[in-house]
Structure formats: C-alpha cells, structure tokens
Length: 617
Image 1 (cartoon, rainbow, N blue to C red):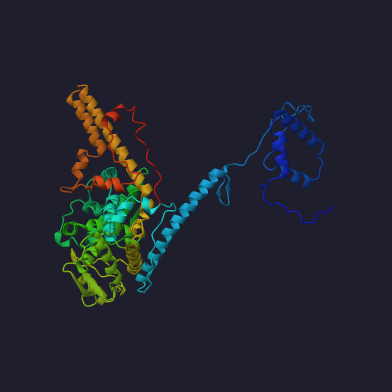
Image 2: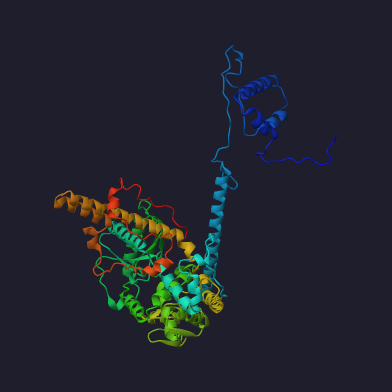
C-alpha cells in the first residue's frame, strides 16, 4: 500500500535513526545482550561480504556515531589465510570530539553548557551594541569636524548592562517615607549627595588605587630610574571616582620647570627627546609579565601611553604633560567657593561617561573642560536654591540653549563674548590661519576660555558638542517631567542609573583587591606583634617591619624617586548615615582583626585570588 503523503527525510549528518533507539533500549543495558549482538554482527558481516555498496553506506549512516566490534569472549577464533587466529577486539564506542568546531563555534557535549555560553555571548553582543552606537555618534561628529562640515546632533543613549535592576534598589534611591515627606527638589539634592558618596572610592577601593599607583611607579622607575613619575589629574585634585583613570606625568631628568611656559606644549627639541623615552617605556611595559592589558601608544599634542591594570581593571595613562600646578590651584579655589561643586561634578561626569561623551580622542569632553563648563554655568546662570539640585537643572538648561555659533564663554572674567571678534588662540596659530596653513574650526564648535591660560580654548576638541546639546535637551525634559510628577523612585535614574550595573563587576574586583591587600598587611602586622610577644631582638623586628615596607612599596629607592611635595591621593569617607542608605551590598568596609589573621592557617582561607578577567571597555 502506497503512502498518501511523501515521506520526510532528514538530511543532517548527525540525524537520529530508530536503530540507535533500539540499541540503547534493548542491547546497551546488559553485557549479555552486548556479547550476543557483537557475535551476531560478526557473523552477519562474514556472510554478507559481497553486499551492495549502497546498502553498506545506509547501514553505516543508521548506526551514526556508535560502532560495535566483536567482543573477545563472544567471537570465535577464525583462522586467517595463514592459519593464525584473528586478534580479538573489545567493544568500542566512538563519540564526537568536544573540540571539533562547528558553524556556531566550539562543539559542547552538554546542552546546559552550550546554553550558558550562548547567553553569555548574547549579553556581550548587546553590551557592545550599546557601546557601538555611542562610538558611531562620536565618529560622525569627529569626521564632520575634520571635513569642516555640519552634522545633526542626536540624543546619545547610555550604555546598558543586559541584566536589569530596579530603580528602587539603587544605592542612592530614597526610601518611600523620604519620598513622601520631601519636595521634589529636596529629593533631587539628597539623591545627588548620596550618589556622590556612592561614586567616590570606598576605603578598600582607595587602598587598591593607591596600590596600583605604587606598582606603576615602581615598574616605570625600575626601567627609567633617572625619570620622575608624578600623579596628576582627577586623582590629584580629589575629583576621581572609584573607576576613574589614573594619570601620570613623566618628567625627564634635569627638566627645569618654567612657570612662564607651563601652559604651552614642549619645544620641538624637548618633545623629540621626551617622545623617544616614552616610546622606549611603552615597549618595556608591554613585556611586564601580563600585569597590564591593552597597552597603546597615542600620538597627540601631549603623547601618552594608555594601558589597563589587569587585576584592578583600572585604566592608566602616562603622559608627557606640562606642569598643571596653576590649573590644579584654580580647581581647588572653585571647590572652596562652591561647596556643592564636587557633588554636581560627580553627577555630570557620570552622565558623560556612561554615554561615551567623555572620550577626548573621539570628540568628547575631558574632566577639566567639563569642570570649567560647570563653573561657567554657575557664574552666568545661578539658581536661587544655591545647591547641587538647582545647579544641575541650570547646567542642563544653560548649555542646551547656548548658541555656540556666535558666542564664546569666559570664566575669568565672567562674560559672554563674540568668538569671531575675540578669538581664543595664540598669536602663532592666528598667523598660520591668516596664511592659510591650517583650517579654522567649524562654526558650531564650543569656545570656552581657560582661566589658567587665556589663549587656550577648552572646546576646540569637543566635536560632539551638538550631540551633547541634543542629549541635554532630552535629559532636561525628562528631569522636569519627573520633578513635576513625583512618581519616580529616583529622579537621577534616567541620568546616571545604568552606571550601577555597568561598574558593578569592576568595583567588586577593585574591592576584592583592596580586601586582599588589607589582609596581607594585617598578617604582616600580626607577625610583628607575635615577634614582640616572643621577645625577639630589635633587629628581627626591624627586619619584619622592613619586609612590610617593601610589601607596601615604601622602600628607600621608591621614596627617593617620588617628587617632593607631591600629596598622596585623599579619600572622602561618607558619614555613617550615608553608609546605611547608599552603600552597595557588595562593598565590605569592615577591617579585619589582626588576631584573627594571625590565627588563620597560612591565610589561605582568607585571601582570595584575584580575577584575571578584565572588564570589557
């Protein structure tokens, strides 16, 4: 009888056939069945040696990956042509190799493992897609700026982590009772204060950052002992966040500071000498036994080495920069003049970072330019509240409405000027422009006069200013709406909310490193205390203390190489009330007991190994 419908045939190489199911259910469970089946297979193979080739191929496809050979006990010794017995073979089961690549990647034996790998890959792809959108927006602005063309500003969305989190569980979110008893602007001010406490490094995170600073300085000075490595930037001024970059200034030997040229780039001869030393250092750091990742040499007005510390995942920059003492003094003066400026800067800096708008090399705005933009908005458009909440609203409104095509901004003195009539540039650059040697900046570029150098335009590298203004327009509209409705758990959610999950893993690694360093120090101190209790002589105790100093990186060689008067980075500790309301559950700030560390057996249970996997940037 012929079937009424056509038979479906699977064309896959590893198709499942009924013979496999029959073998698994009736033969595989018992050894007796396996021996009988092996004997039957051998007899059948001997009597059907002249079978058709196509029939043998079909039979081989039916058994797929399972091939049986005659068992030694069940197969009779069949003499060969020379009269010798055939060698006996046991049961052999062939399985696919786990390292065999497929079209979707490496083959996995278990479905659960393959599913986990697939989900992790999808998560990484979603995260990279959000980062790629920001990169494409900045690339569009940078290319248009180079070609002296205009472009349309778009709203730059923040990078996101695929794992969701409730806004009410964010560490800076007020409780329900606080939201009901406070006005919207008071809530915003409270959230900004708590967010600043959350974003600043904890005690253990700052210990890890200090350890990275000492380690980088030691690695550099071991290879270039006649140079000086100075910390500058946000780590020096106190504006650094927990995951902020650490900037170093490489000073050549016998380099005499010149206050009159501190704001200018080095002369060609000095630049050539310093550039050679920096390139040599770049080659050396690439071979530092895996301590650093993504070591890149960047050619710019101030050449630099960009790298990432493997254990802490902190980004590091070693720059051939000039003396920044004057700029640092101006920042400290404004921080004292406006007490809420640090809180405001922390929030706005995070707004830029999670959207990729702080990448100077792609047309974004660095920390110093952003700080001066905040000061300019406070000076030119102050808010009646005179606090961080009012200053945030006015910052977004001021730069959203500012006409960058006509006006420039000055901070000292505080004025708005015609940027075409009063250009902010040096006389040398002006002469090259008049001679046609260089092209002028596009008309839409921001003009912001540096209070430390009247000839320095802080906005000349910010090609993404139109994206920034479009983003400010969207954020201000959302913030004003949430303030009026008062229904959102956290008013800062649309502005900085994604940063919690984006930096969660990095901060956990940083916290773990700080915890391990503190445990090691407590263990060394416990050894010193034990030596004192046992009545050892002073020489032994000094030897132990010297080992502690070497462990901490405070040896005489390093101490002598550090520049005089260079202050150590400071850490702002949150109050006890702030810790109970904003501290993430993953951060553990309780110091270990030296006695407990001493009683541990080798410290193996207390000290955890670092994660070597760097966080994707």
